[in-house]
Image 1 (tube, rainbow, N blue to C red):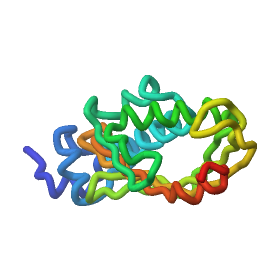
Image 2: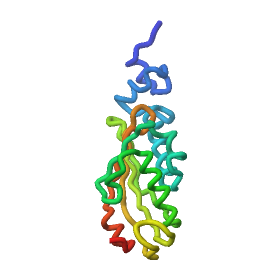
Image 3: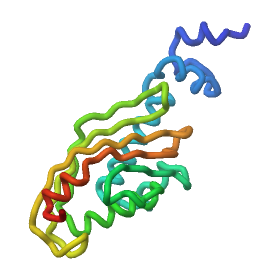
Image 4: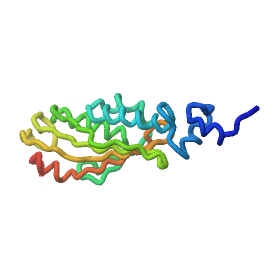
Length: 173
């Protein structure tokens, strides 16, 4: 006797044949190890790799090869790919070597297949590089990543960040 999908749903995602997991997850979140838990853990791993300056080499496994990027922030205005953004972050940490983040909030939107991460980035401009010689000034700046998934890979990421505020803190503006 074959069990119907509605009956299987009563028993949780882990009881469903694998081919039904995404269908099931569109109606409610599966338990640990289900598709929505998967994008959450992938997003956390990507976030850690990106924020610690691993560059594209450390981030590529979480992203589509042609993943796009957008931000309405002056320093990032010309960056259009997630590959370029992860390399930008890697470069930033060369002249701000004490750069670090504090994760404030992390949430998965199952309906839209996206994950949002809110963090606080803190650093001091002490190294050579950047828009000017080292200023010795510091910033603590809020930002949000919205990571949109295509299956189990990030297809697009938007960064929401008030760059002007951070640039003034650092003595760059």
